[in-house]
Length: 311
Image (cartoon, rainbow, N blue to C red):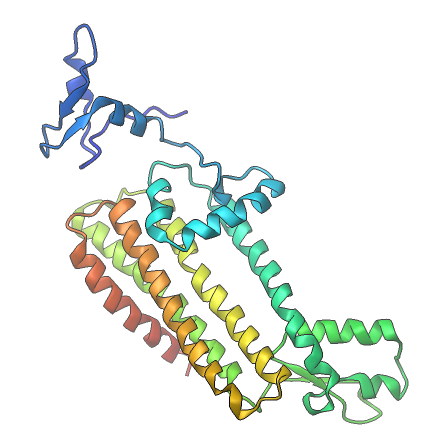
């Protein structure tokens, strides 16, 4: 395990010089000569023990796929409240970006498969281009094939559907054009833009403060975590759209628009809480309110400008 000097819990100032003055025993209390913060030396050595350490509930620190699965509920539950999450996941904890990215990929696939179930009923309706009539006319027909194709269609729901044209084509894939939910999925890119904007902002802050030697992996961890809200929002849009189609797209479903708006707001707010808590607890920038306040407004605008780049 790497050796790290004892540091002040308030300003991270090296306390090795103070330790060197001890002659017979360790005092119980001390004071930082840099910032004047009073502390218990037991607190200093507790911080010292955190360097390169792992957290039992955190998926990034898992060693096996079984641990990834078991730690998923605890990781997600704490990430819902970034203040609680970053209370333990600070700059001293071990960083395993590949494990974090692998966990995000696996959980995204799992959630996508679960949400895809709501797309299955929509492909048994000729209105939305089920390929069943094509299969029944020959060339390739059987219950297993039918269910398999409908299952594949559900996986890409609602961004494409299958329709039958003539005897020369079994089926053809098209993008949904009859409804606005496909376009509304684009708002997930706002979350991507927010993440990119925060990365640029933090790099500028490190340059201004002369902290460019700050471990890049810390920025990578926060950026990956910040992409979780947009991924969840994307699945929320699929779920809302599927419910709307299953229930017949009636005028009574207008309330779903407000659910969508709520999902967008939660996505952006959740991302901002992740970044602002990281500024306070991971990078320990003081005072933190200028960069957090400006960052929340600036990166939100940056997120929407990022979407406009594609239109």
